[in-house]
Image 1 (tube, helix red, strand yellow):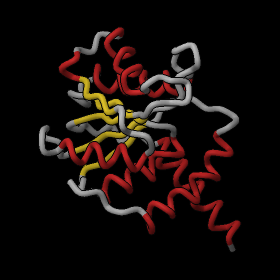
Image 2 (spheres, helix red, strand yellow; image 1 turned 180 degrees about the vertical axis):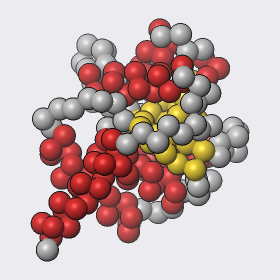
Image 3 (cartoon, rainbow, N blue to C red; image 1 turned 90 degrees about the vertical axis):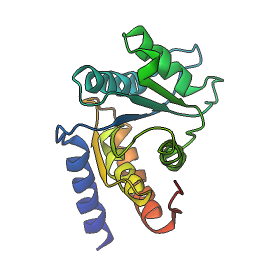
Image 4 (cartoon, rainbow, N blue to C red; image 1 turned 120 degrees about the horizontal axis):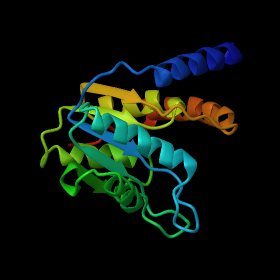
Length: 182
């Protein structure tokens, strides 16, 4: 029974994460990932940023929030992500940096707090396909009603492990995560 549940859940989050419904939103939220020891971006993070950049350039989002924490390598992910976007022509006025987004829940809390300063009604999240369903659920728990997601077309062998980890993380978020205050 557990195996069937795991398989069904994995299939559903994969389909949800790979489906781009082409929505527009007030802000695109790009979740951080590893910055290498030499300060370069990991390929996974580069792909997320390229995906977010495409959303911005196509007019689907007028602003991008880059969220990540201080990695073991000594770099703030949000700051490095902003530098990437600036190098690719995104003006500072269209970039919001969250260097305190140490995990998915913290990114959602920090974004919810921004609603006091920015008119954010709708959110378009960018991360790996296996992560999208949980991020959307957490944003809905935080009171966002218009939440969509998109993922880069980038796959790694470690995605298999990540899919399994995401099964547990999804239900932990569903049942045990405090709804952030906005």
